[in-house]
Amino acid sequence: MVVHTMSRTVVLGVIGSDAHVVGITILEQAFAAAGFEVVNLGVQTSQAEFADAASEHDAEAVLVSSLYGHAEQDCQGFQETLEAHDVDAVTYIGGNLAVGQDDFEQTRETFQALGFDRVFDAETRPEEAIATLKRDLQLTATEQERDRATVTS
Image 1: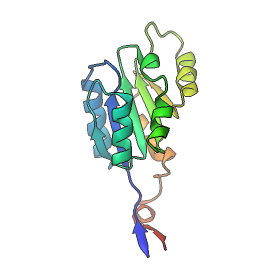
Image 2 (image 1 turned 60 degrees about the vertical axis):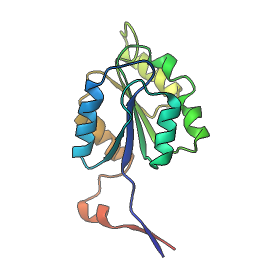
Image 3 (image 1 turned 180 degrees about the vertical axis):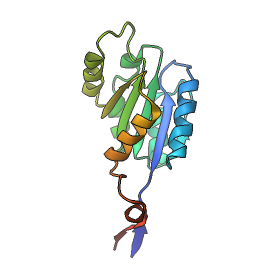
């Protein structure tokens, strides 16, 4: 009999040529405080680096940050890159995703079409993303239920 506990690892980074580090530092601290194992890839992270880290750490979520407005170009083919690395994780993206972004709903639709499960604007508080991720990963159970391991034979 093998006992598996749920992995609560998230991979976090700033994609493409973006060098904005403050936001992901705040996110790293917030997700860690909420009980997640956080692998922070830092800034100027390639799609392959996200995929490699998610695969290596068996991440349940990949959190992509972008603040310089060019996320759409940076994220073309992102889901395919993850699939090529056999990554099965929830994917989030957030930040200032488009230059001159007027209508965030249109931006949300653009990134959902690129395969992201959740899309957040730059005004989203870390607590909101954490609560959403817990719901998405079904981690809203009581401590007692959460501590019960999944048993497989």
